[in-house]
Length: 95
Image 1 (cartoon, rainbow, N blue to C red):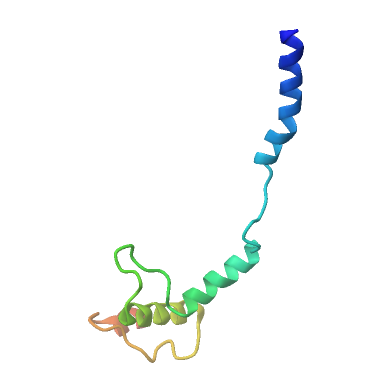
Image 2 (image 1 turned 30 degrees about the vertical axis):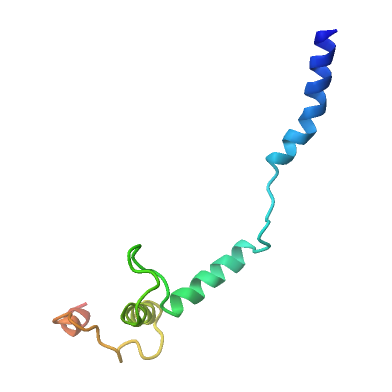
């Protein structure tokens, strides 16, 4: 009798346990949506930021925008110069 009860309990608990491991997307965002949001944040200069500097300062945002423009060949990439970096133009022209 105990064996029959144990088997019945195990059989009834299997369908409930399987739902715990089912993959679901509670946020409603797809991977493409998240990648688009990340790219937009990078373009706006909001990421990357150091862990100890959040929210990013205006200087950090400007620097991130400049780096993004250089990496992606956007217009005005050379218009803003990085402050405090001696010879920044010399390093770019030697490549």
